Image (cartoon, rainbow, N blue to C red; front, side):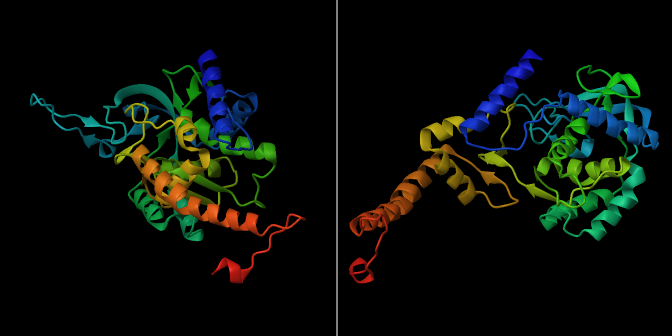
Length: 321
């Protein structure tokens, strides 16, 4: 807990430094969040949607998610000719092979309901090609998924089995409900839109709606899927050591300059490649050279034609000589 307290404080300080406002800062150790997650789990358990089973498969620590063999890619062979291995495409590390007793959610029971949801709400996932990926995955047949961990003891205990804790992303998804209930807008009178990265589109567009259906809760109206911030074409990741520190960028260039770079270079819904040299070029050529020059000219004219009450008179004839 001391480590988590320290990290939470650091993240708050980063957001404050970047002048990012937010409604709430939720920690999954909060009592109100624990209570809500256990309430949702109990509802699904009482409905018969959660059962005990055995899990055996690959788990990527970096993704905090389970992987199938189809999700992995072949790592380039070593120089000594040793056989390559199958790794996570985002973190380029071999996932752990885990075998343990878990509790599972009956996702297969919701395949038809999910298809009905997609048909009823043709804009449930944006952009459209991401929605097509989601529907293709569902049409390929769904499998039940684990909602608990036996080996990990840090987490929210299952209300019906205290020997196991809730799987981290199952509990994390309900953060949306925790925050929204606090603010009073998780209801049918409010449009709910999630903005998320493409790597968690299945969680949000398939697993999450089924979990909410099981608990008789409101389903979000839209899942807006964005791309990655990449560095030299590779996903930004702590495990790869290619993370860009936004605080350093803001200190070096200015907050608005960094925001301008991201808005200018990153298309909505797609990946955007970031580099310090690119930020520097935009800063010099467009903000200082282009827009900076424009602002300087406009402010000079405003100063030239200023009158006593602080209003500005721009005389067209003199301005455009």
